[in-house]
Length: 240
Image 1 (tube, one colour):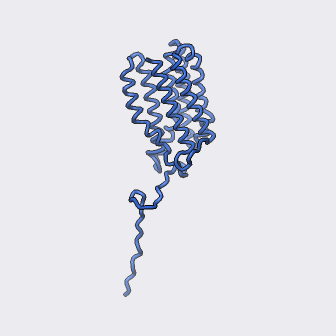
Image 2 (image 1 turned 135 degrees about the horizontal axis):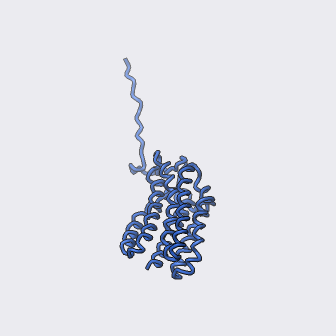
Image 3 (image 1 turned 45 degrees about the horizontal axis):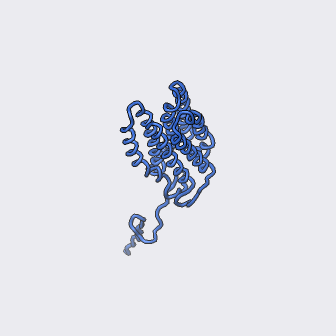
C-alpha cells in the first residue's frame, strides 16, 4: 500500500517574530474597520503622569478646596482611562461595547467635574450650588444617552449632546470675568476653546494628518489633552 503524504504545514510568521518585511497587524475598531496606529494612545499615555500630578496637587491643596480639585482630577482621569480602555485595551473583545459606553459617558462626567472645580471659587455659594446641580443633571442625562445609543457614531453625539454640555461652560464666563484672576480666566477660557475646536475637528473629520497613524480622531484627543492641561493650570491659579 502506498503511503499518503501528509499535507505540508505552513508556519505563520507574525510581526512579533521579527520577520523582515512583514507588515504590522492593523488595529481595528468596534465596527471592524482599521483604525490609525495611535488611536487612543495619547489618552493612554496621559493616565500615569496625570494621576501622579493630580495626587500631588490634591495633597498640596488646603482642605476647604481639596474636594473641588479632587473632583476635577478624578473625573478627567476617568475620562482618559475610559478612552484608553475602549480604544486600546478591549480591541476585538465583547467588552469593547461596554468600554465604548463608558468612553462616551466619561466625557460628560469630566465636563461636570471641571465645572465643579470652578464654580465654587467664582460665584456665591447659592449660585454655585444651582449651577452645579444643573451641570450634573446634564451629565446624568448624557450618561444615560451614551448607554442607550452606544451604536451611534460619536460624531453624531458631538453634534448634539456634547455640544450642549460644553456650551454650558459659557454660563460661567461672566463669573470668571468678575471673580477670577486674569491669568486663571484666560487659561480656563482657552481650555474651553480647545475642547470646542476638538469637537469641531471630530464632527468634521478635519486634521486627518496621517490616516494610518494619526487621524482626525487622534487630533481630537490631542485637543482634549491640551484642554485638560489648560484647565488644570487655570484651576491651580484659581485655588492658589
